Image 1 (tube, rainbow, N blue to C red):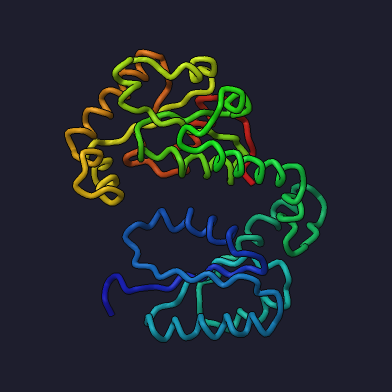
Image 2 (cartoon, rainbow, N blue to C red):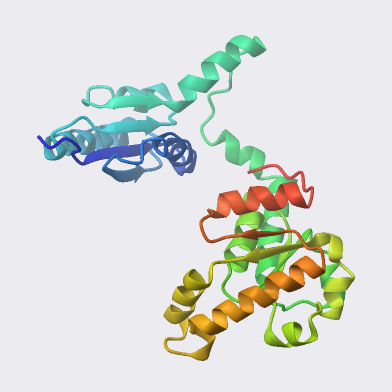
Length: 277
């Protein structure tokens, strides 16, 4: 057997599996040298589906030659019982957290499937959908001055520096209304922000990126163009950083940061106390 064999990791849930996968990824990130194959099995809400999941776990054990790891967020004991005869390391995420909470709060949990989504289907959920629509409608500078007044945050930076995916992540995870506004050569020639942004200075947050990475991203979009040339990328980034410093706009280099890290920094910088969904 090799010293670092491929090991299959299952994320099993009676819902979408997103909670199991998110928590599991957070734990597995502490083991970057592991060679893992990941499988999500959602909606395991009866015994037959649990037995089928157990079959997949056993097959992975035979194929890999090592025990799979199973992250589970099943709340119904019947499907859960169908998994237990499979040879795997089971990490019952709800059991790890629910039992201590029951003891501390002095009450038993509802053990209701999909309870999280029931909570989300409320004003918070509607706010998140509204924020997603806002981000899509106010992407890449498509905003009037009046519409920018409704934004929680306005991201600025050169084209392809990460503004759009960050805006959507802020909307989906936190219900933040994020507009984004590209800084273009005309802004650099004037060495000043577009007029509509001046009126919303307190909402501005800048993103920058390494020139080499920006050129690589732009080459995928417009190969061999001036837009993607490394010299032009260096010029735009230097000019954008100079402008953001001059205008006292907080900014972050997105080159080596995940969207989660970028978003957390933005929420802190603009003092947005939004809950994650």
